[in-house]
Length: 177
Image (cartoon, rainbow, N blue to C red):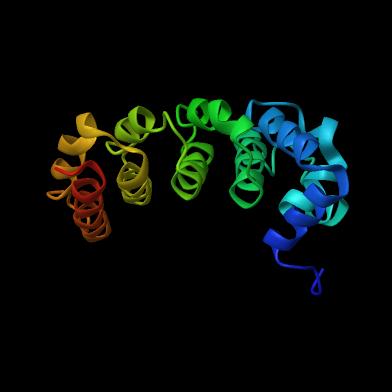
């Protein structure tokens, strides 16, 4: 669909249509691994994909980690604190895509309890995940996470080092270090 709305607007439209509590419930269920077939209509809004043309119900084309990622992405745009536990849990996802999206959600919404998961992901093999983990620690980390951020100052990747510098400044100000 060439004229489809931006995904954030589509997601907001779904939340308005079914209500925020139901929306959050759908997203948490998807993030927790619910079968995509249970939420075909909702996933149309969450993904912006045409189900028949794009084959999103095809498990070989779109692996299950995509469904978990789409659930988390919905929460990036429409938030309620009731989703906090699921986001913290999602930081431990076996695949980096849902975990990375949970880092983004935790960062945007300052999700309490995300610090330990973000600290673990700061050691991920992918620089983009490490950089997002350090960003998350800037807003969700506590004093026990400062050493993780300091260690990222020596990361092999420029983006991670740059984010670590910003995160350390933010932590120092926020935690009065």
